[in-house]
Image 1 (cartoon, rainbow, N blue to C red):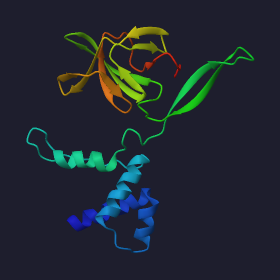
Image 2 (cartoon, rainbow, N blue to C red; image 1 turned 120 degrees about the horizontal axis):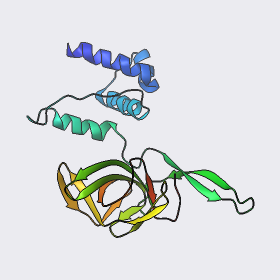
Image 3 (cartoon, one colour; image 1 turned 30 degrees about the horizontal axis):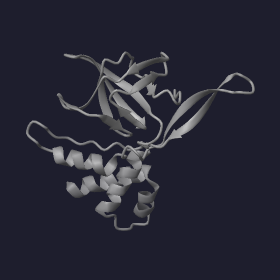
Image 4 (spheres, rainbow, N blue to C red; image 1 turned 30 degrees about the vertical axis):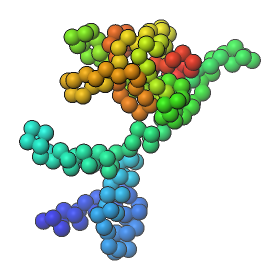
Length: 196
C-alpha cells in the first residue's frame, strides 16, 4: 500500500514539476529528497498543495505539519511582493502610478497591510503584516486609503490568545495594534512613500 501511494504521489508531482517529470520518464531512481524538492517547487508555483492531517489535542501529526511548513512553504523574504506608488509628475502635474518591488528589508521604507480586525477587551485589535521596513510603537502611520495619520499606541505579538508586548515588528512579521482606525485591506506607510 505504501509503495502504491508513493508511486501515485510521484505521478501527480510529475504532472506539475518538470524536473521530477524528467526523472520519472527517464526511469531514474527518485529519492525522498527529490520528492521533497519537487513538492516545494510545485507548492511555490501554486500548482500543488500538500495536505497534512493530525490533532493538536492529542499531539498527533503536529510535528509533521510543522516540518511541512518549514520544508515546503516560502520564507517571508522569498516571494516577490510589489506595491504601487502614486506620485505627481512635476512636468505634467498629473498623478502617475509606479510599480516597485518590496524587498522585505527591515531597514527599508515601511509598507504594512491590515488584514484582520477583532474586537477585544481593550478595543479594536488590528492584525498587520509588515512587508517592508519596521513598525515601531509610538510611530505615526499614514493610512493610504483614508489619507489620515495615526499613532501606534500599543504593539503586540500574538501567541494563540496570549499577547506579548513588543517595541517593533520587522519586515516579514505579523503584529497586532490597538486603537487603530482602519478597515481590512488598508495599507499603511510612515508617510514617506504612498504605497497602494
